[in-house]
Length: 259
Image (cartoon, rainbow, N blue to C red; front, side):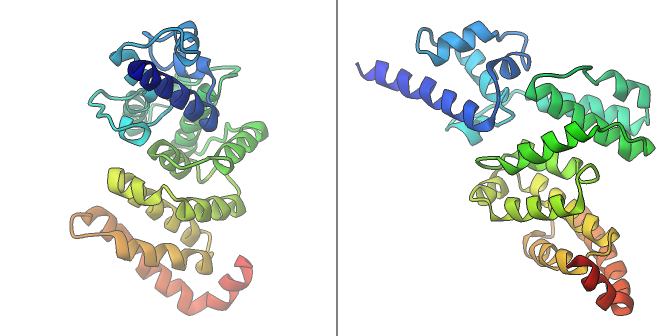
């Protein structure tokens, strides 16, 4: 009976997290060649347990580390990590054709849509070519707005897609991320990703001359960055110097624009 109750808790909890995150079983299944929708369906309905490997893959398919999902350790690279590495190599080589080859046409599943957005954001950054449709932009804003809690994947997604969103959306979502109850957990589990996202958010507001929106991010970064965050501290220092020159000349105009 005890084992049965434990099993019930595991599959019910997985079902709850998957639904809260807005992923279909199909989204999860395509993230790993050893998972199928029928396996996930039987697992969530309590008909069959998944093996440990498949269970960890199912958690990874939600774009969460196992520590974020459950008290387990996951030493295998996630689908997102493998995808990001492939995309980063193409970005470093400025290989637009390789990036475009990563796009899935007529994407229907949530996972495909999110990863297409990451690729299109990379293409925009490398070449300036805008491929994102209005429907994709609306999908991204809604996805981030309705998050029950932020994960490392969501932080990285938001950070990568700042230039796709409207500045008012970026501000609102940035405030939502900072106010999230999961921010402290994210900082303890993957502080590097959160700090980089905050730095990108800060630079986003500075380059668009929204002084009043940048001040809070700057203060938070100064609290979070340590002597080990040398690259981020140098970037912040350079940005602050530019920021300081701009504000001395145009603070009134910038603050008027930010309202």
